[in-house]
Length: 226
Image (cartoon, rainbow, N blue to C red):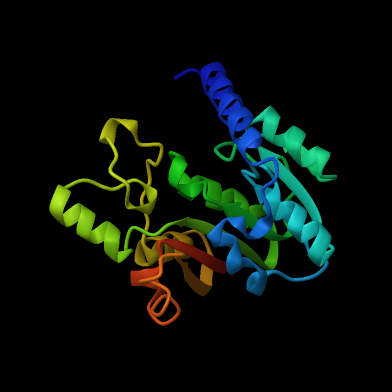
């Protein structure tokens, strides 16, 4: 797919998403339930692949953070600017347009599973973070017990939330569990500081805090630049 087609694809996708998420609140998405325990006040933050900037807006309002949003879609960046957030159009798969040691924290939400070379993106995140700066990553957890069962019985990787999916229609092209992501982070100069699992399913809730790798449908990882 050409670059122009990719841009048009994401602009159309975000145009549709933004219509649906016009009245979306921060806590509507279960991933966001655990994020406040990882946030800090007055940090300089990059909201990478920012989408509708729900998280960036929350950081700005609740934690007085200086937030910059970066996204491939013009529609997404327009949404960020409407929330009073500095926005820049750019790709996570190219050199990030920021000086080295610029940010205290990078929030990279639900995007690592969509890209070809996440190791190269993490190199760039490492470069732009200050020493001891943090990256917070969220992504589907392929170690989740329902996903394991689906793969066992169907011999195919399930779509997020365990719904049946035609393999040629995947939007996710990279698949992670805690062990894989931890190894990738270590390779690129990060040390895992916290691992959280999230699920709204009733059967998971009693176990997700003690066994997040198995009962977290979504995983959220905080890692520090070494």
